Length: 129
Image (cartoon, rainbow, N blue to C red; front, side, top):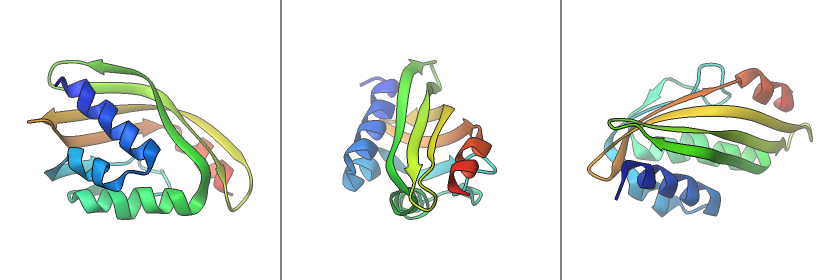
């Protein structure tokens, strides 16, 4: 299995709401960093359950039809780069949001060990306010 396949499996699990599938591709030793300014940023998480509790659950609470849709997933040797678009409708405001993203992943032994997110957090915050 290529590293990009592991990343694709993560996106598919998130899209399906498959929490065991999400946890199944995350390494126990993890470094997960959302972009500063992102509504769910709270430093670097080191526990796979933090991804569920601090990101996936709040997104489900705050958004309708939220998607993280990769357009390209590129295997770059020791890293994987995905480029895509976030979209959704804020439950609080009813405003739609669309924001491009770049995700940089590290995968070791078939599991995600690091995630770094880059996006225009203002587009997301504006929809929520």
